[in-house]
Amino acid sequence: MGGWLGVRALVTGATGFIGSHLVSRLTELGAVVHAVSRKVRAHVDGGQTWHVADLCDADQVSSVVRAAQPDVVFHLASEVTGAREVRMVRPTLTSNLDSAVNLLTAVADWAPSGRLVLAGSVEEPRAEDGAAVASSPYAVAKWAVSGYARMFHELWDVPVTTLRIGMVYGPGQRDVRKLIPYVTTALLRGESPELTSGTRMVDWVYVDDVVEAFLAAAVCEQAPGRVFDIASGSQLSIRDTIELLAKIIGANQQPRYGAIADRPLDHAQVADIEDAAGVLGWRPQVDLETGLRRTADYYSAAL
Figure 1: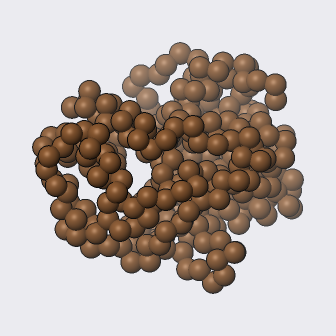
Figure 2 (figure 1 turned 45 degrees about the horizontal axis):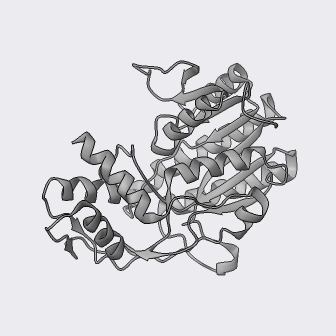
């Protein structure tokens, strides 16, 4: 693929945090963008075709793939939650696994030459970790998706790549229940955010860097059948991250650490980005302080 001009790209989860950034970037590069959403869009930017579909419905997924005839599919639609409640098992299974299997099947049937890039998670259990237990319903669902992706590649030559993504942050994250938007908006309002102990170590990655990783994976001839970690390759505790954010904002109030219980089975998972660097030619470009400053500026302007 010599460039993105005229390339037919299908993006699921197109109204989500990463998906909306990816749609904008593809449009900017001149791709023919087909975007999938569960709801009709009230406003659509030029150069994009929007499809309304429930990805858990195999027939609807097949219809979208047949209509779009994509050269590349970016699958970002997901039920993203770290919740440990048993009630989350079924929705995360359905939203993450069923949708991915439906899409893999549709691509195999209707766009066999199309490249497919899946959004995985660094929270997935890894073979090198031995008998590691998945830390959440979300993590085990993503792990299962990666397994199906490998099978589709090996059995039916579907050119699929999985990106195990770290903790993504940046401007435009509309779900203010997520850590960075929640703390940022609270501090900007002069409130004290209620947090866990803050001891968990996190591997952060800026949203624009994640978008570039998806683009790199889509064009790399050595990527199909592979799994790549996409993050910074380093860790910082939640407490230290929040202290840096508070310093950037100039907040005087103190977060209430320990107001919320730490989640069970939370463990540090640092990404190994050397394969992404060596094979995809990708490394993160935005350091944490710069990214947090851009994020704080975005929410400050939005309040």
